Length: 264
Figure (spheres, rainbow, N blue to C red):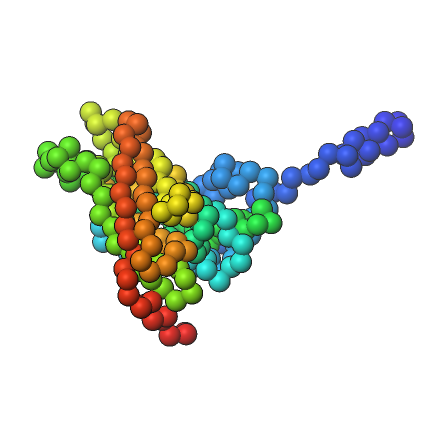
């Protein structure tokens, strides 16, 4: 019996024990499932330095603005925006290859839900923050406006963008795409959305890479901060789930950098 117990103890010591998911301060019923799916065995902790800004109430559940700002955290290599109780929880998975750890967009909300930002740092650890949002139902399950109007195909793939220099060598890039971003949750309308966006310098060097899901609002709008200066050109490449490719170029405005905001 003693030999059997000793063998079990030796085996247990040889196998790494996976810690349970960190306790969710928001008390979401979906936190454990999402944490296992998104973060796997990576360490996770809640950290208020991950600033997730959004309105407390969703006045328009089809286009809810969210900002993730992790610029005070060193070594950020990946950023995920997700809403726990959405039928399509993840909105974007962003890699700021040569960009500041900042991303802003608009998402759909299907009900009251926690909205979170998660950033992965060079150590492999995930830092998470967010909060509850009050929202009416139907953001993910009502047809896009362009489908109702019937003009979605006339403007499909149009890209607009502007960029302005910032202090320190970064720029602020604002992009908008014409795309219905169909979720597949509306009767007789199949899922159809942008799925990849790459931002590159004029020499082809990667600045930012993003995977994007149908929970992003119709006609996606994005704000990023690539490390590129005044007068330089930025290339944008995107692809949707039907295999259509979209390309555009934006020149960073030839002007003095925008002044830095005052310290809080």
